[in-house]
Image 1 (cartoon, rainbow, N blue to C red):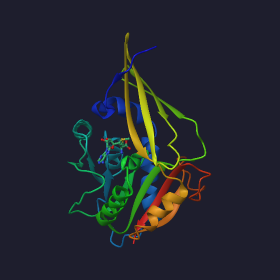
Image 2: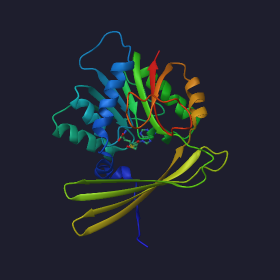
Image 3: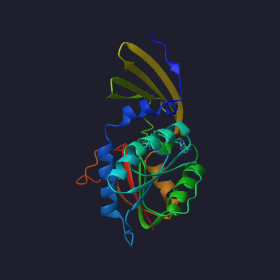
Image 4: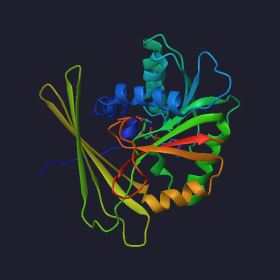
Length: 264
Ligand SMILES: C[S@@+](CC[C@H](N)C(=O)[O-])C[C@H]1O[C@@H](n2cnc3c(N)ncnc32)[C@H](O)[C@@H]1O
């Protein structure tokens, strides 16, 4: 059996970025349109400001900067922030980058829009951290500003592993990413997730794996969390198809969930 070297994949921002680049343009468009449709900020500023907690490799910072927004991103990982900073510099675009934690941060500036996609929010492993995060985002937004929060819900009766495969290629490097998650133990709200990367450059093949825990949510648990943070009004739900003609209900029939929250 092939051997995988254990590696925190946020130490290899380029590989992360190659894998997740595919939907970036669609996501950027969706974020901008979410603000245009649902935002109720009184005085428009130029440029508008967007905050990305846990911005990672900066793929969406770059996308939003290209769309004329002024992005601020923060993350725990210095390699990810360095990569994000370098790509913005290469594109001659600006972003504010900081080291901070999702569960507790405070910035002086105010933002029209904030977003946290690809289940990143589920890194916050307890209710206190999740609430703390939502309150900190609410505090950072202007009244009427929008927070777009995208994550997978868990269907607890399903007792098998889930698999996803992502494939990307850039400048002769091909990355195949297999993500597996294990069902949470009954009554627990943590799922184990593992990503395995097979990285091929010419004749050379490297294999990396990393594992982490995610907090799990079903629709009811998501609603309970939102109810505990009245600073936000839940104004709409979509899925990962980014189709404005197909709003969804927040329920367990659709597990790919994109919440649109508005700062009261
Ligand atoms: C899946 S990546 C998402 C990156 C980016 N938002 C995107 O959409 O591509 C998750 C990021 O969350 C960061 N992260 C995990 N826990 C965090 C925390 N508690 N506070 C800040 N960043 C965190 C990781 O370092 C990583 O860069």
